[in-house]
Length: 190
Image 1 (tube, rainbow, N blue to C red):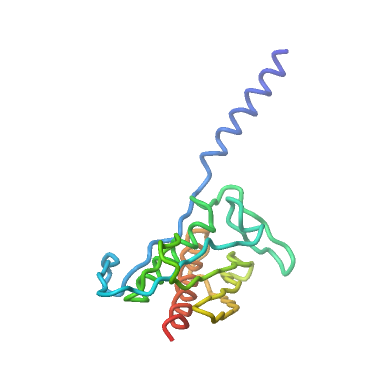
Image 2 (cartoon, helix red, strand yellow):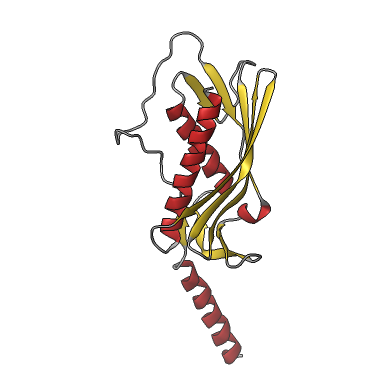
């Protein structure tokens, strides 16, 4: 009986100690070229509105763990390197921030506005992970619906990490996501 109790106590201690090794990551905030806070500007008249729908992610990206591709066909989900908040929410919030900065004169929101006169952006992310060769991979597609027009664009970015580790992976993924937001903004503003 005492031996069983000692084993249970040891297992309980080891389970508690494993929580201390967990690291949580958040995509960094959008930086401006001036290095300051993102400015909120008033637009005279009715600005064009863009609703950024909730970003959808592939099933393997929807958990808490950061995904890492270990071979051409195998992926692992980190048990101790976790997203601080759900990845789909982080991607949407970052996209709204980036597009707000890059589309002056637009009202960009992650929630539907009161009017019916808005463009809609839908984004599906199929890859947002690190890879065995030191690359960060971002893949998916987006659909812009504006008036009676629909525009679909796939995206695929493979970026080199400057350093090893999950922190640099998250920074590299964030930089790639900002780059994709710039591509979306360019298409919207045409």
